[in-house]
Length: 128
Image (cartoon, rainbow, N blue to C red; front, top):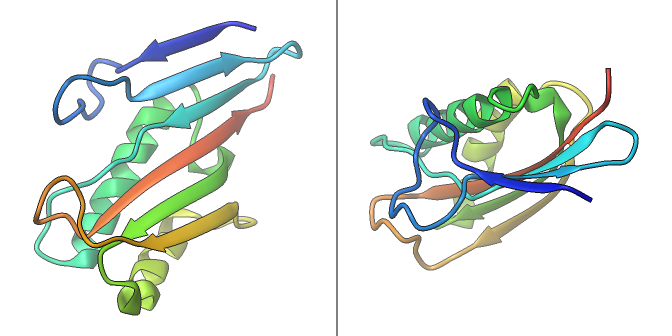
């Protein structure tokens, strides 16, 4: 098994610079599993932050030859679970096919005080 840890140039860089954005695990069949670190984004509203996060995730996946259609698992951390519907409406704009497996958690805060949402994903890249 070959594992590559990376933070691709041109993609959103880690906030504190002390972790990799992507772990790529090569599979025997030529495919790969991509594990993305949690992403946050700037914005005044939950909808703006959620859109920014999905755009960042899309850029990270694209750097590995993947897309949001390849996401098989998503974990979402919200600072206010009562806003789940608002988050879900934006999520459905980006994840339009069969929904991935999912977990959503309410947390008291995220590492940046203004952050309302953090999302991490796992994607499966099928060999061509």
